[in-house]
Image 1 (cartoon, helix red, strand yellow):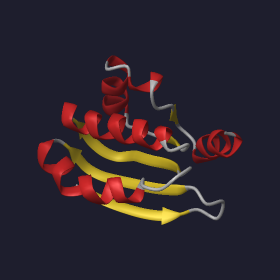
Image 2: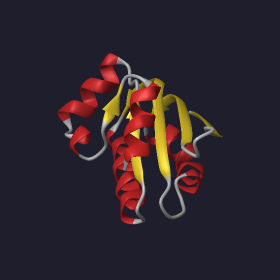
Image 3: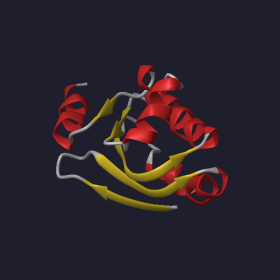
Image 4: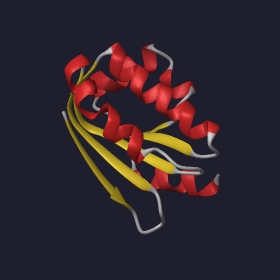
Length: 114
């Protein structure tokens, strides 16, 4: 599992994950991911386009981090998961907690409006 971070011109954090969000992959990026999502009022887009497997521990990481971000006045969205990962997110009810967008511009618009 790889994690890449960059801040967009509008101040939104873009975190790109690549690989498998299973127990090994989640463990490899968990502390960096939490660090990138820390602070008050952060706006975060998590790009899942290169995540090819999502296990329950990966779902837990995304949901608990999103709730933590929201508790500090921020917001998180997910971007462009592949069909298999999107299916797992839908079945587990994640979109009710973290909105999912297929286009970066849509995710940015929602985060900037809130």
